[in-house]
Every structure is written in C-alpha cells, then in structure tokens.
Amino acid sequence: MRYERVVLKLSGQAVSGRNDFGFDPEALDHIAEQVLGLRRLGVAVSVVIGGGNIFRGNVSANWGIERAEADNIGMMGTVVNSLLLRGVLVARAGGQTEVRVMTAIPINSVAEPFIRLRAVHHLEKGYIVIFAAGTGNPYVTTDYTSAQRAIETRSTALLFAKNRARGIFTADPRTVPDARMYRRMHYNTILRQNLTIIDQSAVLLARDHHLPIHVFDFGEQGTMERICRGEDRGTWVGDVDSDELE
Ligand code: UDP
Image (tube, rainbow, N blue to C red; front, side, top):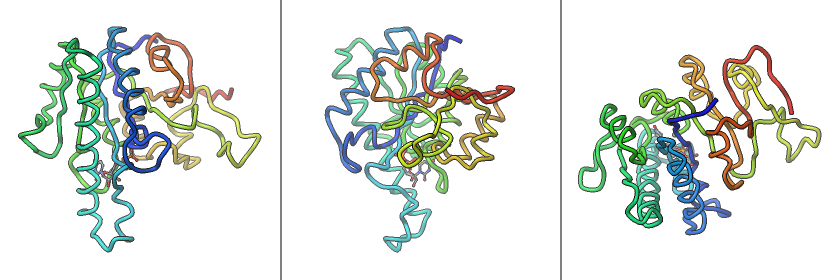
C-alpha cells in the first residue's frame, strides 16, 4: 500500500548516533536527509522524537526524583531534540520547506502549542511537523505519543525507526543466533510474547485503531521512501490473519 501521510518515530538515540547520550551532527544530517526525501516524494510527514539521549523518566529512582518530575525532565529533553531537528531541517531544506514544532507542554516563545486541527492543516499545506514534549503527561513514552499523534492526524502508517535492528525478531538476534525476523505480524503477537521493541501501550492503541506500524533499519538509506511506495521492508505490524517469518 502507498502511504500519503505518515508519522515517523525516532528515538533520542537517532540524534546521538553512535553514542548513548548527547548529539551527533552527522546523525542529525542523516535524519534531515531521510525526512526531506519523504517530503520530496510528496508524503506528508510528521516526526515524534524521543529524549533518551538526554534523560528518561524510568531512571528516576537512581536520582531520588519522583517519577512524574523525572518524566517532565524527559519531556523537556524531547523539546531540545525537536528544536535541533527543526534547525537542521530548515538549513538543509534551503527555505523550500516549512517546518513547525508543536509542543504538548506550552513554551510559547519557542514553539507552537499542539492543536490537533492546526497540525492537520500544516500537513495539508506540505509543512513538516515535529511533535515535541510527548503527550505532555507522565508515565508514558514517546512510543505511545507517536501512535496517538498518528491517529489524531489521520496518518495512514507509523514508521518506527530503529538503529541497529532491521525489524522485529522472534528473539534477540545478538544473543540468539537462529532468531528470525517477522516480515508481517499481528499486534497481538507483540503483546502475547511481551516483545519490548515497541512499548506495549503504543501497540494496543495502534491495534484498536488499525494503524499499521513498520519497524525498519533507519541507518539504511531510502528505506522510508521504499516503505511509502509500498515496498516490503523490515517488519509490518497490522491486521494479518497469520504471522509471516522471513
Ligand atoms: N515522556 C513522558 N511523557 C510522554 C513522552 C515522554 O513523560 O508522553 C518522558 C519519559 O520520561 C521518557 C522521556 O520523556 O522516558 C523520553 O522519551 P522516550 O523514553 O520515549 O525517548 P526514546 O527512548 O524514544 O529516546
């Protein structure tokens, strides 16, 4: 199936490149190139970016910080990543493409508030939209946010970018040599087998709204474009009758 409107979920690690923390200009350049490639193809694209390269709320116990407060810090991390990405996208696009950051936590002087219909309108005009600050609520992650924003903006697929994984496997291929990759699988397989590659809350939401999810290797040039043209790459998660292994 050809996709005309998609949400791309990037983890903070897509910004930090080979490192677990911080920022890598080459990694940001790669993201910008891939996103602008999709735009050139005529796909309406929005991005949800994580903040794991800065802070994740689930480490709150290590710092003696209450979880809800730690999650606020994590959400602010996603704002930093979103602004960085906007800067790089604008520079790379050379004024050809408008890029908007919409935040779930109001920060009026640096980004627009998230207003669903305004986001839809931006996409209809061909703008790239970056959703910052997750959902604005603690106890969830940006995986969940990406499924929610995809449904809210009437996107037809959620593209789940992974670094160092080209899809969803039956077991961790780094430790289980005969692990096999799923080409197609049902949401329920992820839930039943407790696979952790995507947050279960995001999978549940996607399942209930029949939102297809593609998990793919973001390091591979042009994969998103191929997926949007209808090619089979990585793992497709959706309403299938039976799972299919590679
Ligand atoms: N976060 C949150 N609510 C949201 C989205 C994110 O509280 O709706 C916080 C949470 O602490 C999370 C952090 O922001 O750990 C960074 O997001 P995430 O862990 O999803 O980043 P990623 O793993 O994708 O880099």
